[in-house]
Image (cartoon, rainbow, N blue to C red; front, side):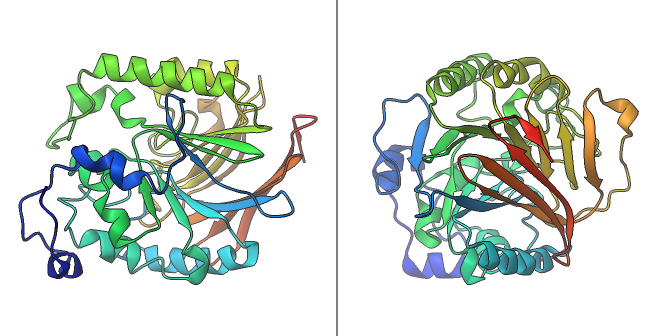
Length: 344
C-alpha cells in the first residue's frame, strides 16, 4: 500500500500514484462503525442527555468559499452553536465542478476544512455523493485517507445513522438517473463500483427495504442527493419516484431530504406523512428557473430560489424544521408531531 507523506498531505497536491483504497476500507473505518449484521453499513450516534437531537443540513456547497459559500458557512456556525448541534448532513455535490481528482486534491481543504471552521461545525459530517462528485475520483471521497486529514469527514455510497429516536438512511441516488449513463454530454462519470448498474440498484433497494422494515426507531428519515419532489430547476427525479418512493411509503418514512436543486424547499405529501425537504443552497444559487405548484400533485409549503441551509431539532414526539437564508434569517419553519402525523 502506498502511504502519502506528511508533506504531500500538508500541501494537498498529488505527489504519488493514486492509492488503491478499496483494500483498506474495513481497517480504516473500524474506529467509526459498530459491527452489524445489517446490509447497509451502520453508524450509531448518541442523542443528548435529554433525549433530543439537533443537526444542520447543507447541500451543493464545495466552491472554495465562492458564491457565498463562506457566508453560508458563517451562519451555519452561528446557528450550530445556538442549537448545540450533534452533527451535519451533506446532501451531496460536495466538490465542484468535477468532484476530487484524488485524495491529494487541494479542493478538499479549500472547500471543506478551511471553510467550515466554526467550533460548532467540528462535529461529524455525514455525506452522500452527488452527480458532480461522480465526475471525479469517487474513491477519493469514500476512502480512509480524507478522514485522516479531517476527522469530521464520513462519506459512503449508502449507509445508515441510527440513534435512539431516529434512523437516517443515506442513499446513493446518482446511479438511478438514466441520463448520466445514456446522455452524459461532455462529462465523464466514475462508475467503478456501480457496474453492473442493474445489479447495484437492485441490491441497494433490497438492502434498504430490509433495513427500513427492521427499524424500530420512532422516526425514519432518508437522505439522497436527487429530489423525489421539487419545484426547483431540476424538479422531480422520475427514476426515484418510480423505484424509491414506493419503498418510502411502504415503510412509513417521515422525511426525505435532498439537494441537487440549488434552492430551499418544502413539499408535504397529500397521501401520507412524507415531508420532502430540499437543502441545496450551500453556494451557487439564484438560477431563476422555478416550476409552479401546477407542476406537482402534493402541497407546496415553501420555496426559495437562493442560498441557505436547514436545521432539524427533534425528540421522540416532535420535529422542528427551519430554513435559513445566507444572512441567517429564518425563512420557513415547520413542526411535525409523530403521534398525530400532523404539522402546525
